[in-house]
Length: 104
Ligand code: HEC
Image 1 (cartoon, helix red, strand yellow):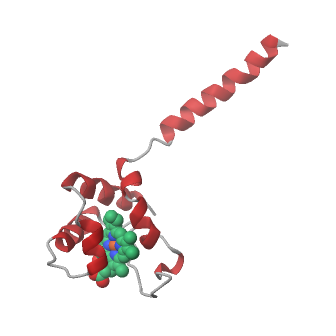
Image 2 (image 1 turned 90 degrees about the horizontal axis):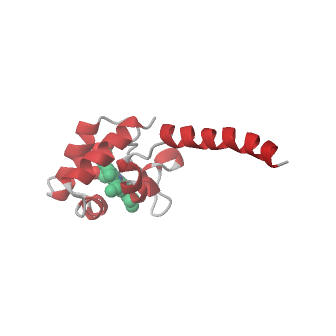
């Protein structure tokens, strides 16, 4: 019985191992979790108050970087996005921007 178990377990472990590599977590994924609360919602309308939220998935990373830096410096004025951008480091911004560019 034991040897049969081993025969079954080995391929399952290999499967999990290769899945782990393929699904390697992008550094921007975790950092963008608060963002996707607004930016990944169906129809891109915030629930309340109702306003349009720009779609970020597939957006050019350069554009996202410059938009976030503009919100930080309040060159682009938007209270909510200023609040979201202000705590991000340059590395956070780059990671998040690259992550959103990869999303479809
Ligand atoms: C509470 C909802 C909310 C959250 C959370 C939020 N955003 Fe936004 N975001 C908005 C809205 C609304 C706009 C449109 C603002 C404007 O008109 O300038 C916007 C605009 C943007 C833009 C400019 C897009 C464009 O097409 O010009 C970028 C880039 C962006 N957000 C990135 C982020 C990132 C990165 C985070 C997380 C760190 C984040 N946002 C979190 C609501 C949100």
